[in-house]
Amino acid sequence: MFDSLSDRLGEIFKSLSGRGRLTREEVELGMREVRLALLEADVNFKVARALVDRIRERAVGADVLESLTPGQQIVKIVNEELVTTLGGEQRKLHYQPQPPTVVMLIGLQGSGKTTTCAKLGWRLRQDGCSVTLAAADTFRAAAIEQLKIWGQRVGCEVIAGQYGADSAAIAYDALEAAINRKVDYLIIDTAGRLHTKKNLMEEMKKMHRSLHKKVPTAPHEVLLVLDSTTGTNALNQAREFHHALGVTGLIVTKLDGTAKGGIVVAIARELKIPVKFIGLGERVDDLQPFDPKGFAEALFTENAETREV
Image 1 (cartoon, one colour):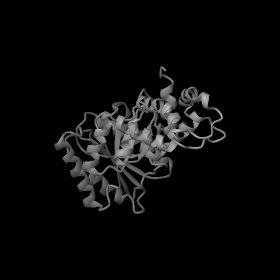
Image 2 (tube, rainbow, N blue to C red; image 1 turned 30 degrees about the vertical axis):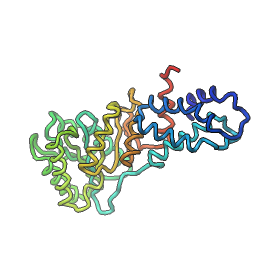
Image 3 (spheres, rainbow, N blue to C red; image 1 turned 60 degrees about the vertical axis):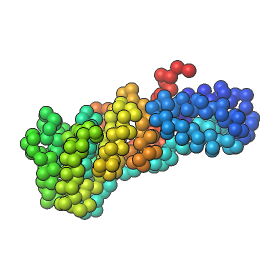
Image 4 (tube, one colour; image 1 turned 180 degrees about the horizontal axis):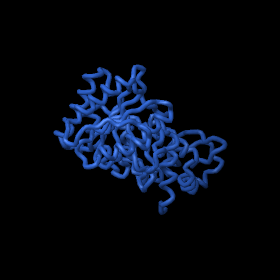
């Protein structure tokens, strides 16, 4: 668990072997390394500072478990605080007893919404659910064709209109069809839009109202798809989309590359939005349920491989 951070803290605390309780002076010796590890994992500065304050508060005076070194004891506290910030446990996708469960995927262009739409459909089908995909991105060239190809690949029907058509009307028609066919899930792929463009956000609100008009409880999930490589700007995106639409969960994509994913911690802490899935590659089965504990451990472990001390 956090081997590299444990090693670095172990060097700091090596003269403390045999000590059973950490003093404030001793804890302060390790806080610099903890702060650097958080920042290098792309955790927002303010969030990193708040976490360090909380870790310091818990560590000072803490009894060191017999099976751990002082450094490992601090790492254990870091792990527990991150997991708590990330929600503590896996958050499952909502399931509506009266089908369909309506899921809107929103986010910036290039975040991976269309492929994520299909991968989510595939995952739900593996769980025995029937799924329909709606191609409500009527602006991006080839977006409809791309979703249709993915739909064939994952075995999901795709409902689409024409380019330039009213996306809210397409979503409404798709919901009507899903109701008639008693489909378990309707997943709506929407056009990518900048969170700073008011007119585009108003179009998204219109789609939301259209679905709500047809089914008062819909949409049941509004999932923001975030490209993990965007770093701290992802927090601004999440803040604006959440304000406009009430985001119910996050899907963080492209975590298979150089992105460290620490921005997820900032979003979870500030907005209290749970991460529900993460994208780890291009294969259809690379969309995985989010595990806070595993993510917290990987946040430092992966980052440590390239760190120069």
